[in-house]
Length: 250
Image 1 (cartoon, helix red, strand yellow):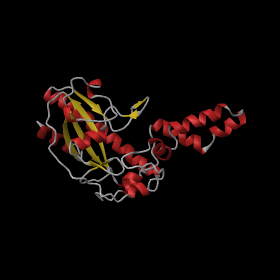
Image 2 (cartoon, rainbow, N blue to C red):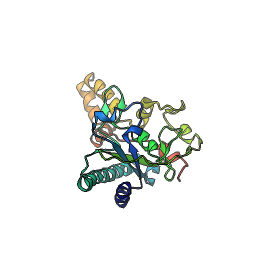
Image 3 (cartoon, rainbow, N blue to C red):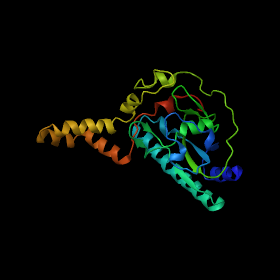
């Protein structure tokens, strides 16, 4: 069954695939799988190589590449779920690699795709705390499909792929990776999403405490235009340094 699914996924253009029994999935922050899908028995993780757009000095070009990948990955993920339902009479639920996510007490996806990918043999954690794939290095993103099919965890034991060059640390504009094994999420978001939720809150607090003339200036500002665009895009990233500076797989 696993080989049939693997062939189907790779024929879609997905770059790699791993299988993981729910019993072998462990994540320190994300909710338990049975709170999402009580009947889930397996996780199928799909890996997508991020193209060279992440290297562009233009954050707009880099983000366009990310949005292309998001659209492609959603399509592949959904097609796989439909394939499992149609051909195996299975239940299947999709997990995208980005939003929507729980923005409550902690910023966490409903499934930690990083931990699932590592447990399924698709890579190891790097110094930057994201996954390093043996072929694509850090330039890889993941989606997943939860299913009630009983699938065997991919039998793959990888040695540490990270070369510990510290390029990700020294090239992080937010200094968010100073502590090994930890990412300062707030520092990261302030640089990678400068027009995100923190900036939006600050803008509107200032707006309501400003005069009518000042408000008019604020609404005509370049900052507001960029914030407006960022909000309807979703999470608009302006920094891809973790990906573009990592030498593994280049």
